Image 1 (tube, rainbow, N blue to C red):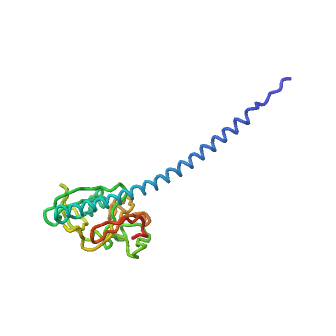
Image 2: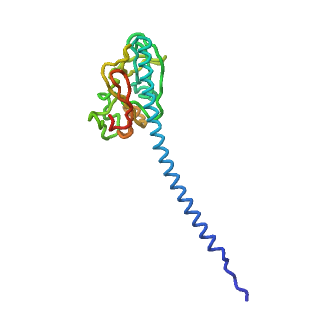
Image 3: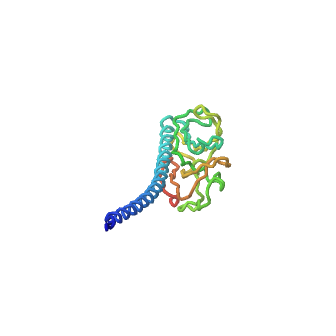
Length: 221
């Protein structure tokens, strides 16, 4: 009588298939972790880029003021009617309260924007959290950008802007801070963006000589 032989490799093949499924599962988990880490890394890169952009724009405004012997404003678009530009477009403009002359235009990375001046940074513009500077104990906000003006910049329609003038002496009327933070879109809201977290901010403090010092987190403001 012929007996059926068991395949000596069948158990090994089954075990190998199970191992393969486990490996695939591990790879999927690792991929999720890596992508999550990259998202956080990307946010950090965008914040650092925005911080550097604001420092460069400030330096450009100061240099132009001293070189040309005129007031030069550092400006941030503050008109929610244009969501794509809101709090992300930055301008350096000569004699903005007279006959404006645009020197340069900057644009911050997506999902990063400049916080408004403290008195205009209301609760409906941000997620709940401890929006207070760790060093000063004051509410976060771009206090350097204390003034507002409605003006057309670079052939755009008239928009509202926050700004601060730098004098021909390279000075400003009082020190302040410029804060950038991560945002998410808010279609249909009062404001087109919402600032996400007080722990996702960077920026600079600006002396009365319009010189910047980099601040890398909430505790530094």
